[in-house]
Length: 440
Image (cartoon, rainbow, N blue to C red; front, side):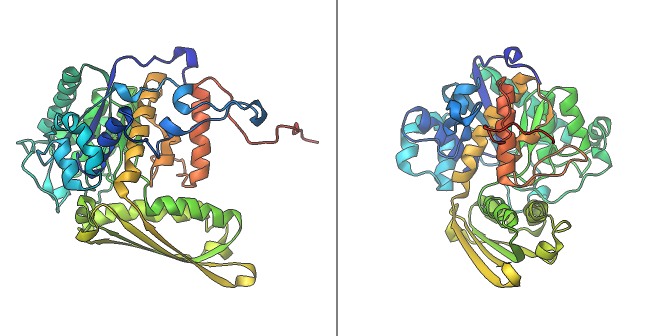
């Protein structure tokens, strides 16, 4: 990692590229535009609102993250993206029905100017979605090169000095890495051969990395999380992160489960059901797309609770996940959890959580933070998988041989310590400030 004095300074416009300009992307754009006009607070964004302690607590050095580090300011963000529907960002936001008119109308001129580029799309990977604004080719090579050209053109039109890409598109069908994902050369050959194991989201990731654009995957798709694109990202010096934004129900699991474990409370069962009605809900109504989501949601509890270490407490945990498409609910998702726990002498207890959340409202600040942090990582000389950004994902992208960390609080400590090191400060261990610990 470069020292603080060697980090390339932010200068000029930062282009945020958004594959999938639906509810999440348009909510993010509207929020940034409203925030920089003083019409709304960027609540949920660590980069904008959170402080970071430096040195002993008694020093009372607690700058805002955005003041400690040379992050791109909101005024320097510009936006572009792709979508299968041709609606501009304002019309897409109206259709999504997340952001109210009182916030949309004051920024309507800026949002109307953001029109999606034609998407690299193949309905066989997202069966419940279709639209007219797609690239007129089935050739994966032509789509990949078209995306690269789109990136270069958008940067020129916006006068941007740098770009980042954050996938906000729909969940694709479940894919496992195959032979074409084993190396960069195999992946290039797979693109040329129209290998069905290469989905559109992988083409976006490939195009971003080839253009030197940091990439984050906000969906559970197999995207950049395979050896070929991991190697390409290192080769080209590009930071990547993913996958699947940690928003509603899984956010609650990563808050609650660590609390059960540190108190050594047992868990017999955890039943989770979701009711949602936006485009994501419709896409996830397809079993093949649901499988992608199920995999990222299901691994959280095992990793946090460690049943092999604590078999008496978690060895027989029954974990069930359901997602139900219910159009009247729109983007205001309901995540309902029934948790059967047990305590002293095995006596049973229950916890019930009914989280009436707004999925895109929770995801929008994640998009902002990832865009700013990945841009910072790129200017710091960091490349490849950025495990320190696991805080934002359901299924964190990690190096081969590393175990995913799902505990939200451990993830948060790691994120802040990484920021301290980037800033040239010492990481915080949370050992006592009053005592020196020495081995007897």
